[in-house]
Image 1 (tube, one colour):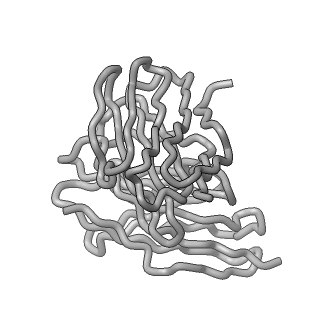
Image 2 (image 1 turned 60 degrees about the horizontal axis):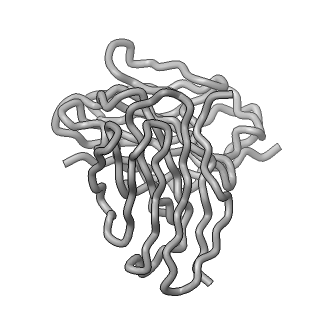
Image 3 (image 1 turned 30 degrees about the vertical axis):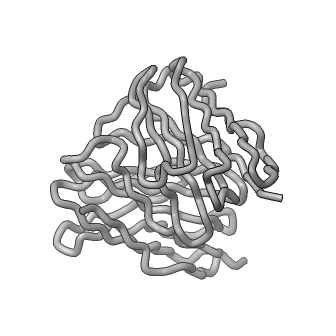
Length: 114
Length: 115
């Protein structure tokens, strides 16, 4: 069954702790993305990767880090430098990076600071 | 600069009535336009897209969208609403001159269909 798998579905972080969100796809897509969703603010791009071993910052990259060691995987680390990490995080992928290409999304991870 | 606006936070429609969810955009070049739907605590599902050609685009679940270049709009429509259409809808735009990363999402419109 093809798709994008995000785990865990719910994640709780203590103050000052780093946490890593997993994103795996078996669609053979080249491009992968991480978005943050806050109520009433739509989706904001954190990082994106167009190819293995390469990634670029999006609009709100501060306090986050990523890696792209395999085509299928694009994990996101929320570091202690991210002052307001509580949000819904969405991973997406697309076949390429052409303008007309739609993105496919995972089911999301809800991160809460406790 | 690119931007997309969804002027209505919420749209309420009776089941069986037609529905419209509004979207306007601003880009430098030609727009690529997308509609997505999101159910509670789930990811976004792709509904339809406009690239070029026919201004009326048909998509999943009976939805369609009309591209209007002069009004810079891309409104989502459905002739007869279902209760199961109740969800959060996002319009998105990408400028033809921009890389794939620069897809901009609207703030979302919550569609509520009453029985």
